[in-house]
Amino acid sequence: MKRNAIFLALLAISQPLLAADLLQTYREARTNDPVYASARATRDAGREAMPQGLALLLPTISASGFTQMNTIDIDFRGAVPPSKREGNTNGYSVSLTQPLFNWQSITLYKEAGFKVAQAEAVFGQVAQDLIVRVAQAYFDVLASQDNLAFIQAQKTAISEQLAQAKRNFEVGTATITDTHEAQSRFDLSASQEIAAQSDLDIRKSALLQIIGKAPEGLAPLKPSTELSPPKPSAMEPWIASAEEQNFTVRIQQAALEIATREIERSRSGHYPTLNMVGSYGSNSASISSVGTVSLGTDSTSRSVGFQLAIPLYSGGGVNSLVRQAIANQEKARQDLEVARRGAAQAARQAYLGVTNGMAQVGALEQALISSQSALDSNKLGYEVGVRINIDVLNAQQQLFSTKRDLAKARYDTLLNGLKLKAASGTLTEEDLETVNRLLGTS
Image 1 (cartoon, rainbow, N blue to C red):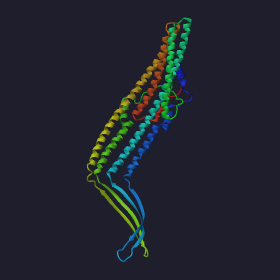
Image 2: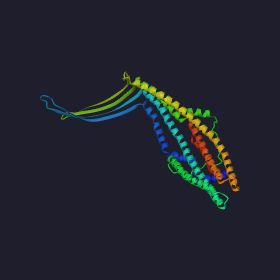
Image 3: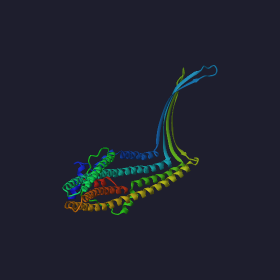
Image 4: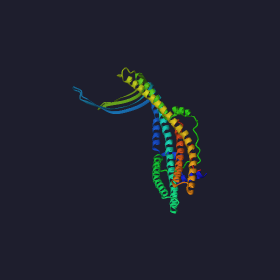
């Protein structure tokens, strides 16, 4: 209980009463982060591949109209005088083309579905990355705040030890060496405080870049937090999930499917195309000359037919495109294998980070108890003359270093838990809510 009280007091040095938690920070980032907003716009653009592909299979209709003034000068050779005739010609037409067989268009429509899936996977990857980036920046700020608080508390303790050493020297129960040693440690802690404050400002700036505004205060991790092991507790299921569900793997799977369809599309350059075409048109023309009756014609045309186009020779370009598409397919296949291996490695690292982190937290919790006992013993020994001042200062430094390392180990373990979910492709806001419940002051 005493240790918890000390830990809370140290954390409270730089924490306001009302602080934003991890979930609130993430929602701010989701609204303001330009990387996430850019990915969302890219996904929306990628979704348009489907209607564009479908448009290649649907009919196209076009209409046109015209009007023109006609003037004709006629010069008869002989006794007949020249004459001039004038008139208007107006008309319009509507045409329709319905593809009946175009394998290239059919293949592009099939590709469109995979392009949409790829765009969704890219956005899913960015969405997961946002969760991890926010958590990383959030815990970096907390760790930096803890470090600053521990250094300030250590500085206060050294200051008290320095004052005691000066008093003991004045009454002759200690040497000047104790005073110099305490003064040296105090000056060093003052320097460390400046560096810690600078590091905190940098960490806050990194979080500002994501959420778009300066973080005022962040809810700390509860001192009594008990970390949970990953579920399932074995590494193999996580690796298997990563190799299939990781978003990078999904992106490359879609890329391989697209590359495969590109081979078909390139080969379609050898295939014929068949379209049904229809048109309807109307024309009206009139012409008159001075002293004669105006003459005019009206005509209407309708047509329906089929157009068959058979490619005969393209200079070898189609065969070249096919060879290129096959090479691109092999590249996509190898990229998929790279993505699977990378996802599996990321899952291994994150899993070991969680399990080893939990073991480290347990060891540091025991070390904290031992460090506190060592400090109490050295203080008592110094008072009765069996320990010197340097022993107390070393014990104090060890205690605060253990507290700092324990806090950092907890943050790293929680972050690795999120990275493990991200590697397996299952990280969601609910996982962030689970971590968020571990934050607070009680």
